[in-house]
Amino acid sequence: MDNASYTTLTRQSGLMREMQTVANNLANISTTGFRKEGVIFSEHIRKLDGDADALSMATGNVRHTDVRQGPLTQTHGTFDFAIEGEGFFLIDTPDGERLTRAGAFTPNAQGELVSQDGYRLLDTAGAPIFVPPDASSVGLAADGTLSVNGQPLAQVGLYVPVAPNDLHREGGVRFSSEEGVVPVTDAAVVQGFLEDSNVDPVTEIARMIEVQRAYELGQSFLDKENERIRAVLQTLGR
Image (tube, rainbow, N blue to C red; front, side, top):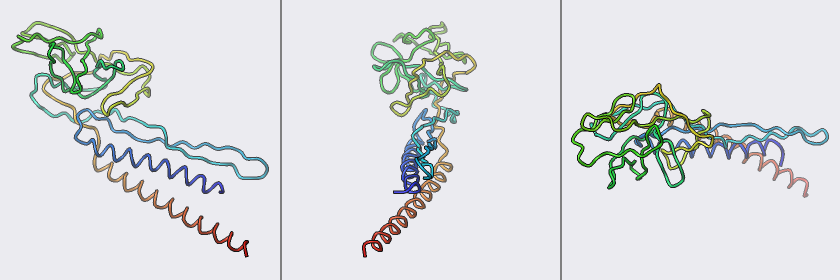
């Protein structure tokens, strides 16, 4: 197989990954706090022995998360929180602390605020946030300070990864950061709102069409190349 075929095959593999990513984005248009994902292509070139052309291999195995803010929807929910600006909520999971923009929380049986998956929301000190069962009014200030019956109770923590690109998706709306996280202070938290997915359906559908056409073009090239090789073999075999 020549270099052109190798290049096309690796490109086809990357396009397939991108198509799967676009399809996943479209499937999560209505998912609260979902961050759009993309695929980054890279090219690897290796010099071959003799006078042969260099071997070029393209791969699309680097995933990029779009952290731009999505629109906010008012829910009037007491424990529905949304972030305006950069940053993530920090939740405690069995696998360790994770970041999320999904702000739909509710008190569990112990009075701790938890996510829809049952993971505890953490404050600025990394501790769970407890809401007394007899709380008659719960308010949230822009800086994340949670007040119960007019008295400050805790401050919801907002964090960002130490390295901007160190964000690894887990479970759809949860992210991990291998290098750790740091507090962010230039963002605001609003109560009674949820952040929608930041996926633009028009852009994603247009990209899906582009990827599909590129894949079909590559497949057409491979089919013609296969026919050419078969014709050469048949000619030589006579």
